[in-house]
Length: 341
Image 1 (cartoon, rainbow, N blue to C red):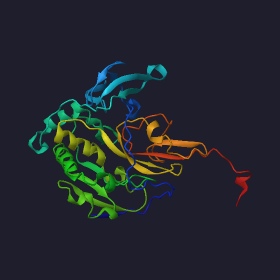
Image 2: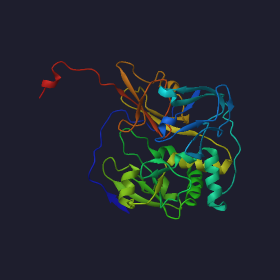
Image 3: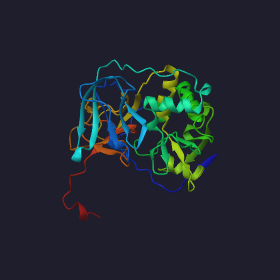
Image 4: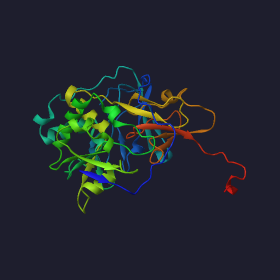
């Protein structure tokens, strides 16, 4: 099935990430930010100075206590930073480099029940990667989605290439899909671009593929839902990104949590745009150090230029972000530039 979209716009920016891997960045510090989750009221479960392992609960949602948010890596809880009115901004963990994980069930998802898979995802901290539409909030464990949607490409400016990121991981991805297929009575829909026909996703079973051609926002999962199966009143669908399906596959294959992911470092102010393997929620200081031109004032964005969040150079990667973008701040003005034809 092919859907051609005519509305939209591709913003042409310099600085696409080259399809090569940079030197792996060892995580010195990582952070979980409750502010990444709209409507969340966090209840903190750890204290500064406490030792934690990957997969160990850090906080949970007061209104949905069964949804746990767990440590991305092992180490020591360095700080719980708060803002105005003691609002929790981030929980910072100093990584010990061992990446030790709690033990979870190692099993074939196809031999487990729906409830067993739900419990595994909730206990390990992978549940928050499932987002529900409408509203784009963390999915409610008690609900049952009509379908699950995955966008297999990103059409935003300077976005990463999932075909490059996911190559050689088809087995793990298939395990993640098998687990997700147990969570819905409907289908798992995957949207791809015409350039991906016959690529990575063509070998995956238990999914239904739809091609989307046209300018941005063709790669947005919301656009794909609208054209494949529009949400009616009372309907709920879930969404998840391809790399997060890999997280789920690893969990069931190894019984361990492994939050390593590949992100793109892109933008016109980056001296050498590449892909980097990092730990989820990693500090950006190691990634950006000596990687940008520093000739003019720069803007650092966790995510893409349209929907990402402006951050400082020593901030942390957003929970759902797949790229870091560096562009000129744009606070310089040309004399009488407004009078040019």
